[in-house]
Image 1 (cartoon, rainbow, N blue to C red):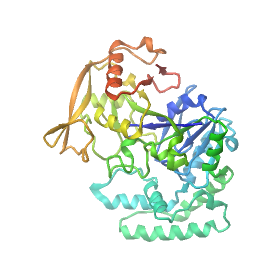
Image 2: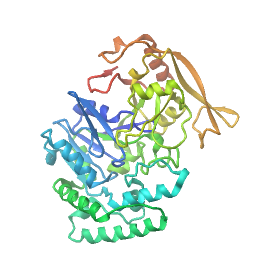
Image 3: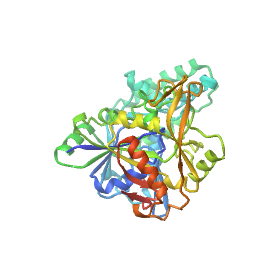
Image 4: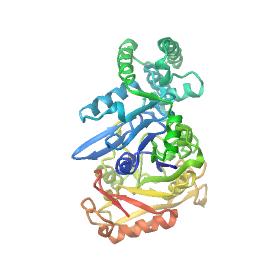
Length: 423
């Protein structure tokens, strides 16, 4: 049985959480394969807004098991807060939520090290969420990290102390003024670890192998977006994991030949949080309107998102490197009311017109080439079927499908799970 993937095709914040929630009824297992609590997946239904950071977005469905895979990094303190928020909904978390023993742990000193590193960069900072993600992945690749499975060992606190002491020396090396009370942070950490240990730890690669053999339907959930991939994103303004389809293989132990559908999610426009190049960014009232109408604030950080027109060059690139088989377009409703819609179809790159994503897309090297299309005036938020969509939106969708050579199967017209149109 193949494993389907769902991932973002832009700089994150595409609406993956909502679509996972919508699709979960078709799956037995939802498995998160990378990233940490720097991600924020927002779900909205029954008049309640939910924000998840580490727990997979299928957690509210009775039919599905939810697995935090080996490629994820877990902050026990943030994880505990998520669990506390979910307890009011009477979910059987011990039965529904499984944690890979090979997932790495974010220690309090990882977050402090993240803050010290970012502060030392000055104006060259990359816009880290300061959640300790980068330092945790650095320890993982440096073979120093702590994993969930270590918590089952009698001497896990000795391993913790050795790594924490090492981090404090590294913080001192950065020579920046970082104020902290490690004793207080550790009290919260150790309390959170106790709660984490109440959950079920599994050898996730074996669990998922047996699930595939028995015919279970599995959806792998990504975090962040393809343009934040550590290898293929706009480096160095990226996250520290592989956010592309290949990340599901290493983040869950799924063989490449067992990958089924690859569902790519994108907004009808483009947003970005934090630093880094953004060729179609708008600094005028149009961009401000997108941000205001789209409520474009980071689900994790609350930072305002930068907004701009859809970048088809970057989107084609993301479709290509992920092998996308189906597309889902989010926030079509946000563009209602614009008389003209623009799409970036190419770049002027060092004096030449290019239609691929070049090595460097900083503003001094790249300027967007736009195609203009008619906008749509109608309010989409009450629409429930594709037949109701305005003709100019259908033309926009048809144009994107032709350019990307991939069908757009879902159009989202609002944040609620019911505001989802299947085509």
